[in-house]
Length: 430
Image (cartoon, rainbow, N blue to C red):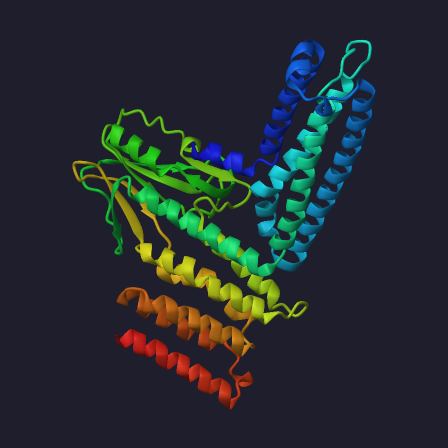
């Protein structure tokens, strides 16, 4: 099911195809009414809603040309937005705009409107229809709908291209990914484990399952793996993180079992989806990396916009805090008999902090505003986390400060920096 969701989310033409199909059905219905239900039109349709065939041909032809023009402008605008996203923000967020429901909806309405107009025009023939028709009136209504969606699209583009709105959308996307993981956890008995796990007891055989392709781990179907392990009386360990790059030699799963003759009919592609690029469905780290890339582009010498980078760092607080609350090195799933069935590896607090901030701390090592924003975020995370995470946050804060170019600091800068460190020490003491 999750594979299907991934394909649907990555499909550009699904929603436009649905709108085109609806328009095709409407065109067939209207043509049928015009050709076969003359009495119905005369009795139930007001005269100002019907036109002659000649006038209908003119109106539908004009509407078709207008919709093609709007569609062309829409495509051109999309290309401009994609170019802006690539040059100003990050190429990783291109797919988000292209597959955005609002973008696909507008494109679908335009394509559907053109299909209706051109099909209706095809059947507007005096030789076959000798009565007034409603096709032109419906066409005018379609044109108004297209015009409304065109205005909506322009407003949507103007909003989407604003960096503040983009950062907020990426934050929401990250929180949704975290929420999906939380929802999955509530369906099964599970426990977060901090220490290294020992191999499960009572199993004499071990088999390592490798991948059959190379690419990024996009999805892992944990519920199905759990059900399979429970049915076969196995213990399955997932050896890869979501978002990691693997080859056909990479160890994906480790299966513990007993019966030497037992059929290990597990087809890894049914449970682990590997693709050419990372996705944000389960990949929390990737969601935050997209925000990090906007910050990196903002502090690059060619753009030099530290305030945008600071906004990214501030918005990273919420998803980072939520991700750290899940905590642990492993997530262990148990069956009703309290037997271990599935083990999922998790990113450690140190790794999550490092992946999120190490590039920003490197490229912003000469900008005190970036350093102070990083410390503010770390203080916020520490203040709302357990004592163990507070210690790791303090360790990472020391790492960030050591990377900073101390020679650029003036007396007031050092005073501000000392104040932040005192705040962090106070939180650690509490």
